[in-house]
Image (tube, rainbow, N blue to C red; front, side, top):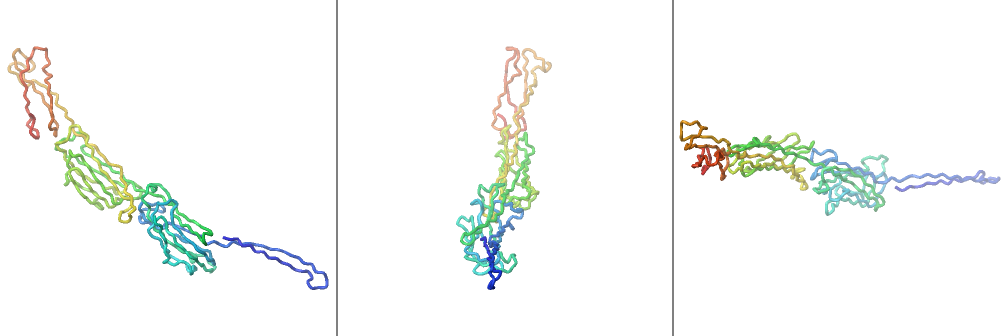
Length: 411
């Protein structure tokens, strides 16, 4: 990087050594040139552990390989130097390995070797290669023979700063000749995150009664443009006033899915990989139990959690929860029949609506209870006898149960 100046001092005489007087003249000429520095660094992201990641888009927990090359000027000797990989924001990546993968043929002793160790920092946020000295021979051609190449592999850390859309840099910092000069080259990374949706349905969803079956469906979808869901776990829950039929549970498509358990009120299943464009649906039926409360709203839901990358590939994988999928089922309400009629009379010759003094009339009403009503107290008031006060006398009332009921019947 130094600038070297050259100056030429020319002196001559017109008659040097002759009999006549001599005249002298002087002229000066100068120029300069700059010594090339050994600081040309290139860094790229050439490989990631997740094939769906493109360019510098990375997922939390993903292993990213940074390939860097450092080109030294020809015919130079470089004193004590270091090459350090780090990020512009501490804690964003976790370095797992660093190594020299190529040494140019012009780079010679006492330069680095492929076995030269990188030192990874205690918090694994950086890796440093120390070079005692290096000689790059002059051959007149600047090419890969003048380079050393290194690869650093680091995981994208599961930290709050690495939220979807956040950016940070992976960079190589070179310090040469006892810190005489430095150079830095960086690549910017953008954090991306898979997304998902859960849709839950019920049929019928209103006026359900004891003894009826409700058909449920849950559809799980990876909704991002290209990123699948890994190691997903889904849990479906229904209220205790329903009982899931284990024989009715079906999952489509069955590939990559495992049914973990089915109980009266829950279903648990796993999906190892949920691909974009291939939703997974689960269908089942649940029986409405006698404990259902008339008119009650029964909330059923499906929860889904998944990993940004497979847990088998990274301990830094992030677990994400999709928005809860819900459906509400409404129980049939108690609505009594309002009919109130004259059933019979003690005098057969009178019309049903004609009464005579001393005649005994039997009135009847119906109360229709929905299936599933239990332990319910019903107060019946005979409002049909609201005639002129003193014109009628109440005799008796009886409860006649229907032939179609469950349990112990009315009392």
